[in-house]
Length: 321
Image 1 (tube, rainbow, N blue to C red):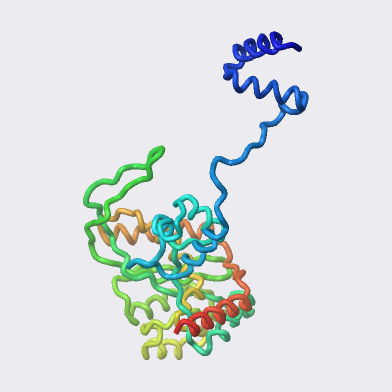
Image 2 (cartoon, rainbow, N blue to C red; image 1 turned 60 degrees about the vertical axis):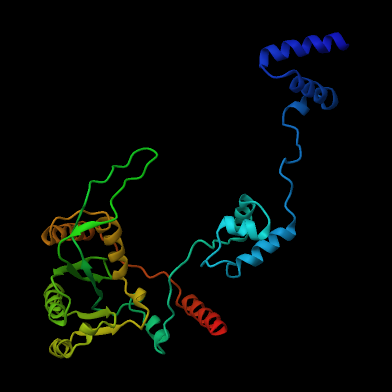
């Protein structure tokens, strides 16, 4: 095809596609050089963003592992960009590539109890004794009914629901709960206070609920009310009860904590209750719904991995302290 043919073809293509002449000329050049296959994919070209020197990435990673230069608890993208001499977007790409999240933190505490390993390997969740019931027992105290000082805005597309940061409070209630590891059902009672007297009343309620002839293994934390002399006397009068106390700083071993987390997130955190009675009624309804669809508690964490992680944590703390 001669020059006039090329030009006429260009004009018609521009008219049909709405592209510029420059774009069509490039297509024609690729058609001439690579035939029809050259038009099936876009031509590769270098990025407009200059590739970052690896030295800058290494410097940003090294700085991230150190305390911030200013009076701050952690690095931000803007602060790191100024310190490393790169853009904020480059800092974010570097952090993402190296799995670094300095803006996030997790709470933890290592147990110093010498019997931690033995209690972790107790096996009540994994291999419960025959003809026995394993109950995870604990209290969720200081639950407060509250009324927002002004109505919140409902959720809509592009906006989350809102609620005020302050509220009016009306007393407190304490939920004492015992979760059956076999079927996941929870026995719960609301109490006005959180003392050994209320705990004994709750134990009597559980005693009536569990069929006779079954040994009851109760997993509890080290709260003082659980070890009160009156509670020990109660245990002496009820020989089928056996208490297993979790180790210090290891309340996560108590399975009922998961139920309390669900209760807080799903019902209490955003709930509006005008009185303690209203709050207790909502808790009781949630208990009924949970027990209607309860599932057995399954312990899936490997004790050896937990123990290894605890040892690594102690080693790091020893190196710091």
